[in-house]
Image (tube, rainbow, N blue to C red; front, side, top):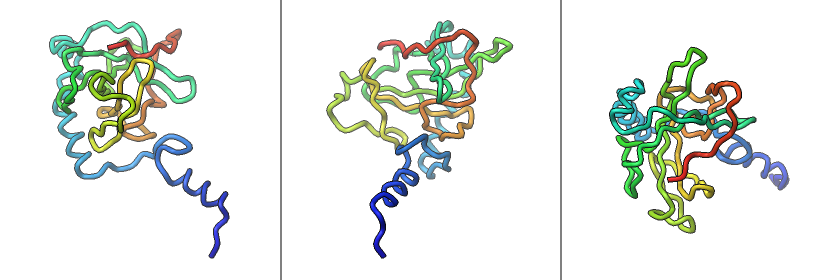
Length: 178
């Protein structure tokens, strides 16, 4: 049977994650599930912003990162002590919070980064938690979001979450330079 090239191309776009749209929400493999459990255990105390501040994350972050079509990432609380070459599940560089309409902080996930000075942009992407990290050329680092505390219909590792809330009037602001 001979398949038409257009149909094959369309099938590949629809079936391959990362092509033609957001990654599908899937059940991670056993190693990723184990890594997620370790991450949740390590970040459980940070569900309280006070605990995160005591561990070196800033209390106040001015901007909530949003995308007009894909949702939001939330407020990125950066612990600069963890910006290192050899990242660890137990030490995410960013904690991703949202502020609820009542003003409470909710921990939704984390972001891991590796600056280009540690892992050059012109090399193969670093792999963490079984995922190839994505380049962020504006701030010269590789990144990986992990929605550890809030289910994301676009997948555990999607960059944006369609249901994360940013207060009215918040505009897109890129992550802080590191």
